[in-house]
Amino acid sequence: MNTVPECRVLTVGEESTSVLIIDDLVADVKSIYDHARNRCQFSQESGTYYPGVRAPLPGGYSSTLRSIADQYIRQHYEIGGGLEAVSCAALFSIVTMPEEHLAPLQRIPHFDRHEQNIYAVMHYLSPGQFGGTGFFRHKPTGFERIDDSRRAEYLSAVSRFFDEHGQPPATYIRTTTNQYELIGSVDYKPNRLVIYPGNLLHSGLIDPAADIYRGKGLARLTCNILLNYE
Image (cartoon, rainbow, N blue to C red; front, top):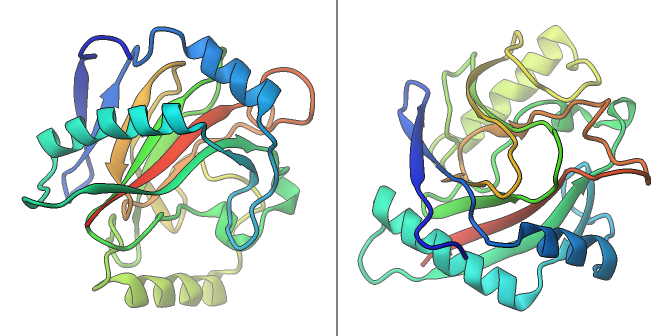
């Protein structure tokens, strides 16, 4: 890892959620990209809505990234004393699903987990220009983060909106719609680390012309870790 990379804080939404942005994280990001593309076996995950393929992270990279992210999380979020960071997911990810194949829930923002002490850690790995990450407010409820107290109400409101207005268009969400407001975004930049609470509504800002891997050219490769403080 590079020595003490600078951390910027983006505050998003009416709930003033902090999103951490750390650039130039590692000295040789190309070696991680090359390892993922040449040595990892990617496959589609069952039981998830991720619109692409994934592969486990190598142990050394995963543990080092977890340790670095943990330092930033403890500096900028309220983590109770005595809690330890445990990885509940650690994966390489590549978007592969064409828009016309998206299920309705893949066309709207999502939250990773509803628990309070889980944080998403994402490392942009690919060279080139790709879509970043957007953060959203659900207009009917005003919710930006979906914790345990809001989960049932939020899911009910989403279902009701579909019933009343129909399913969203078969596209990746990239901007404000009649159901969601874009409240902030982080641009894609190779070797950039992004950290945010796992219950914050978000979506990859996927450009179908550039970001969907079809077997040739560069892929929008990210590393995705979920850290649970328990």
